[in-house]
Image (cartoon, rainbow, N blue to C red; front, side):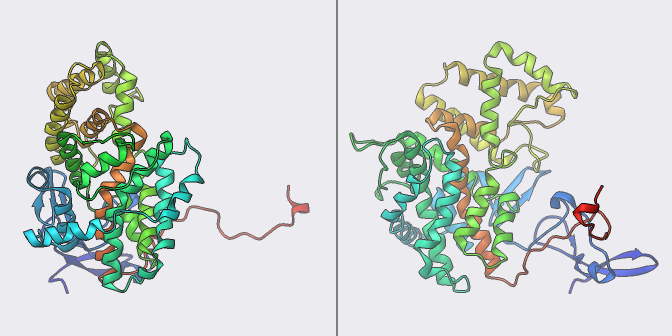
Length: 428
């Protein structure tokens, strides 16, 4: 029981509500007792509601803090690698050298996909959006691994997690290869996670493909920066689906569907599309004025963040990585990338943006970086889903491992009151 209480008085009746404290962040008021009084709480968008208890990720948007299991995101992105972060998220602690080696070996045993899964791709049109394919194929994994779908069995849950982490790059690359009519490239387990993905994306059977280590490291950082982000829309979707007892592949598929929305996972694609709309450095001034005009519908995409009211902690690492990639591919003189950097400079120096804390966020830099690597725009959200899979499956596993309730949000009904049915012949 909580030591402190909040008191809510409704129609002369006082209800005592527990005040709960976490290890970090604001205290929360347990409102579950309110329902006994005949009332619900009203919170559109759930912006004031803690829907679960979690030990995985912590965000302080005002201070620009993002922690995975207590570790600052910038330290992990600069000093760790994605698979080490995967281990951390899944297990709660960083691995020892032996644990890391064994973890990588285990993942390598799951990188291939069943040969019959190739048939799924043939059912999609060649111009199908890769996210549409991902939703279907990931959900279909349950048809191939139904022998480990007992969500009450910890070993089954771990095996499902490892399969998803290992197979996501393979399936993501297959989505791309299918869309351009090239043969699928099998995974190479002697490569790093990110390098192997680049190999499966851009390699062909005709010649050896050696991934650029600068690009592989950049992609690895992108994976780390997007691995988890607390109870966002897609993660909440995974948890809500999981609360029904659905299998993990169905839950992750649901998360991919939520991530597909342009307001969530499509932000870096939207930022890149905005740059294409601006078109030329000489047009920046006009678009800056449009962005400042409250009556103009134009918005600068990739600047500011709903959660971070300060600088996005992921953006600093992503900015440095972006410049490394541009240097590695010789893109500094490319008109498009010069436009992006010119826009960044204005946003960092213009008082209008500084006062409103509209700093370039991780989506701005990741969009530019992925484009420089050569990844097409319609694959951006797929990359996001690939990276976020570890967060989704960790959040799902945390929920299933603890007491939980079937998710059932309530509503404020504004429809018609009860009325009697009228036969169609008598309706006017």
